[in-house]
Length: 113
Image (tube, rainbow, N blue to C red; front, side, top):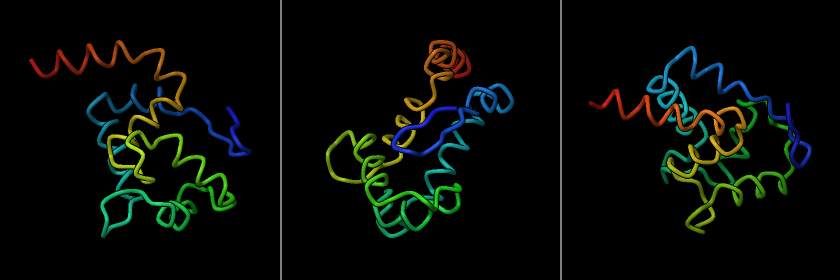
């Protein structure tokens, strides 16, 4: 379990990958993105993350923590998270997945063959 800016994050992702497989896990990440995104804009905005954070049990996040989370994942500098940025952020927040990312890549490549 880790804490960044007071938000506790428990890394269940490696267990999810083991249970769901790579394809199933990626599908769940995409579902998580859709749950948090602004339906009209198709991206996660400050407002959509703040509004939907309760669904993740993060309703006590301060505005500053929400902004920090968006900044952490915002690779193109537009102030929002698109699906790829969200998935990248989730991988970066999971030390267990980062360690096994090579295996995930190999499994994904093999499944495409």
